[in-house]
Length: 135
Image (cartoon, rainbow, N blue to C red; front, top):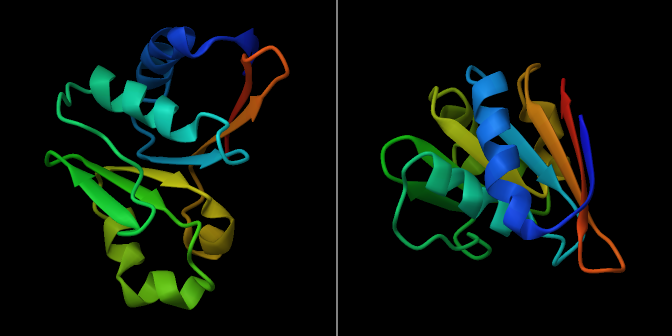
């Protein structure tokens, strides 16, 4: 599934469609350069899930918990898969809760077989291209 040249204002529509189509998929990964819109997409997803408090990227804490049903990870600062294991990422992934993971490359060996991969690319005209794949 691909969306090309969309504005961030379209994120709620896309999120709604994803939550309906992939209701059982709890691990979502987000790839894209800095400023691509990963956190903004996650904010839209949390809003669609009913979360109303402020959402920030967990750049320094590595994981934020929202309500009792969502974990948000930012793995940008992790240097190895072992660091993720040290803070117990496997327990989070096995929790049955939504896990939204920015910069997932370092922890790919720990991810389950079924994940929703979302790749966001910032385009020249301040729009985004989004590629979504179930793996």
